[in-house]
Amino acid sequence: MAIYNRVLSLATACAVFFSCSSQAADKVGISLPTQNDFRQYKDGPELAEALQKAGFETVLYYGGDGDVPIQQEQMRRMVNEDHCKLIIVCPVDDKALSQSLETAEKAGIPVLAYERVVKNSKAVKFLVSFDAAAAGRIQAESIVSALNIGMGSKANVEYFAGAEQDASAMLNFYGMEETLSRYTYSGEISVPSGETAFEKVAIPGWSREEAMKRMDKLINTQGYAPSGKKLDAVWAASDEIADGILESLSKHGYTEQDLPYITGMDGSAKALRSILDGGRQSTVYRDPKLLHQATVDTVKAILGNTTPESNNVYYDEDADLEIPAFYCEPVLVTAANAKAVADESGILDQNNEH
Image: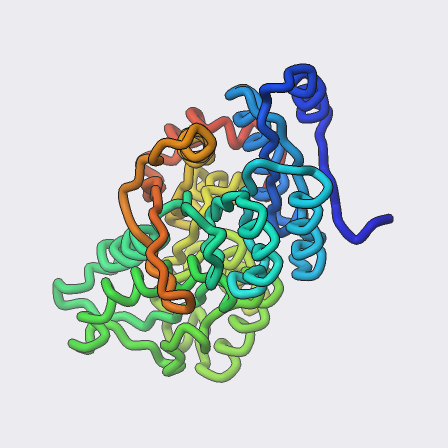
């Protein structure tokens, strides 16, 4: 098998067939990091379908299991063999594609960064994502509210960020830090481990297993226990990371009554179910329909030689570039609105607990 993964669902294959019948259809290439993350596995065909409904032909690839060389090969293939008019990429590593995208730049093929920033590449013309910093602020504000911080309460909190190679994870972390720093400065929030730098708390690959290992280590080194040293909250950058934290806590004797307040992000079925059942307290939902529509609108504008709508700018320090961006707004989900989000999104009807 070739070192790239080309994925066409039945629905995608049919749509490509029909778009092939029209010579006017521009081909759009999509490369996502991995199929092993349920959100991305599901997101790829849905994004492709949205683009097909807008009249585009699509090819969809996944970067193996977050494999940089595979994704680099996909960039070359989309330019030289698929002859795409535009490339959408969510990078495995935000700094690893700059050379691969030089081929696209030389061929005059615009690149749209999707969900994650691609650094140090002049081929990247636009970024469509959720506002990662806003999500971090929302997560942090939910901790402050749940624990009555600022009203005389004090709390022990630990941080679990996303992957170090993901610029969006860094933005998410800084959004959280911006909100909680005033309380760490005042002493109302303590981080007993002392691990407060992004590089120290970043979880490789946003992995549940890696998050569980780090939580195990914190329990052993800090003495957190249901009847011992109290852990009041954990800022977890994603639902997958929160799952690992919860597995570790459960393994060490925590019950639902003992659990710290744990944040999350993605609005996974497992997280929503847990909130509805009275387990975990919150997540941040990123509605994929908003992201898909913003992406379709941006692709239409770029290939139609008009200026895409933007509501922000991402500054790439590595390339000294300002990249216009459209950020969709994330939404905090708690027991108060979890049912409404579940009903509207249909997440719990999709027979998965990821």
